[in-house]
Image 1: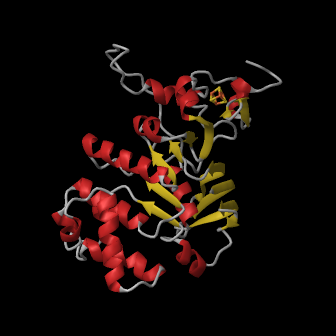
Image 2: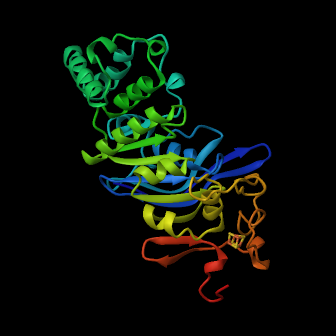
Image 3: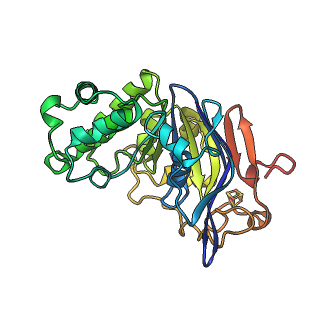
Length: 321
Ligand code: SF4
């Protein structure tokens, strides 16, 4: 459904070029949930915004292709992009309170996409809004249409955003940290809902820093670091056999009831400044396995087994470590 090929998105600032997304290629097959995981500032959200066509100046898609159902949407005009945004691709943002207009009733906000894209009558739009509210589990749907965002709980607001994103039945739904602002019980409900949507044919690109969320719902996972994909595999393989030192570090820093550890492992240091990335591996300053060539030579993505790729010199074929 979605195929991103060698996408590069940069910000051109007074201090130089910030490569927010650097040569990212990924796929979201029809009816699957694909996850992107990584720390804040690793390029996950900027990848999503590039797909949505929401990169604003001084940012720019420098190169690459974004194929939605075979059509390259990078080359579309702003007018053509507006036509597919909401109808073919939709996005759920992290914080429902800031994504909803506080002075407009939620029903009107949800119906707006239908009125704009499908030019239906107001009455039909309202009937469809009730239908989608019920589908996303909003109780007393007809009455809720008349609520303002502040009258709803965080979970209900997020459901309204999902309803808004789904009302035109898009082919692709991008969910950027959709459960970060929610408590764990509401998070579980939203994740169940996303699985249900996926079962009805929608493809989902799920962005999260939470490995637990990714493990629960995704079919395939991409791990990003400093704007690049550093590892990709199906979910079971990634969690069962992580290969990149960064992925291992992420997994080690998750608390486990089974390990009995008193102190959590952490990855030393911080994500490097994207203005001054090392010429080689961008994880080299934090990696416990760093070798001489790592700082100068950018590692390629190596396939370690079918569907499992790792960007690390430890997997160089000519010179196994
Ligand atoms: Fe560590 Fe080198 Fe692999 Fe980078 S390429 S993750 S520095 S071993």
